[in-house]
Image (cartoon, rainbow over all chains, first blue to last red; front, side, top):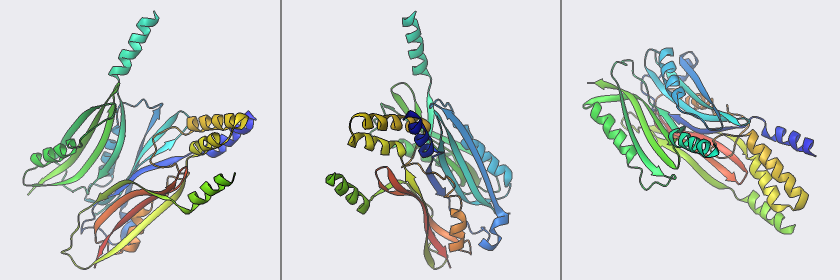
Amino acid sequence: MKKILLLLSMTLAGCTHSIHMSHMSDVSANTPKSINLNKHIVEVTTEQTVVLGFVFDIDYVDQAYQQLQEKCPTEIVAVNTQYSTSHRFLHWTNKIRMKAVCAS
Amino acid sequence: MFKKLFVSIATCLSLSACVSLNSVSLTQIPVERDNSITATSHSWNFLGIAFSNDFVDEAILDLKSQCAEGKLEGILTKHQTTAYFLVLKREVIATGYCQQG
Amino acid sequence: MRQYFAIAAFGLLTACARLDHVQIGEIDQSQGTLIPFNVQVSQFGFEAAAAAELGRAVSKGRTAEQFQQLRDILALMNMGPRTGNPVYDDEYANKVMDYIYAECPTGKMTGLTSVREAKAFGAVSGEIVRLSGYCIL
């Protein structure tokens, strides 16, 4: 019975996730038209693994901010910021994804 | 022996703090990124019981005062909570670029 | 047994709206005619541990114990902060930006509102990321 329980829980558990928020910034007049969008999109993702809740900084947020600016030295418009968590066994991974349009 | 261990653990737990991120947002980032400014405001509470969120406005006023007559862009706003033993610190950290007109 | 069916039927017919986060951007009404648009992506949310807890609450004896064990294992395997019920795919909101550009191909938009919400009933929900705004013509 315990084996069935374990198998069932592993199947149900899988890898679950939770999107806490997805924020879209304002979009300035310099934004390219959608037809040219793909070549202007920049995207960065940073993450932090947390074991049993012991975490002492949230520097991964600033890392995403820095990496986005490094990827696009010109104006960055239409910024979509997503904060999510992937749940795991006794630990979890916090993720920041920043996707924006590089108005070069 | 156990008493000392218990006191040590209790002291460590009281002094160490676990941080959690509540929300994050970012506005459009300008080409000129020379003048970076940061504003922070916080509020302490016991067992998570808070009666006001006015500390948020302090961060905005601080950010505005650091960029008087300028335009603030590329603002990264973080709302984080730091949990100490029985006490919580709520914090708003805003970083951005000031474009002086 | 009949009362459980009644509760389940009631649950399926009603769902509660949950609002987690909302943020409104600049609204510029001086640039032209504003055409509203709305983009929404969603994913099935399921809190397996809460479902196991429900099973424990409505059962007795050995079955209740097994549900309790299942709940504990699930809780340990899915640790971490959550907003609403967990989902099994965290990429469902990756393309929201592409979708708003599809709604507004000129790229001239204003009044962008970001909403994180859900239609929820207990352990089951539809976890939603919604972006609305106005396309400037």
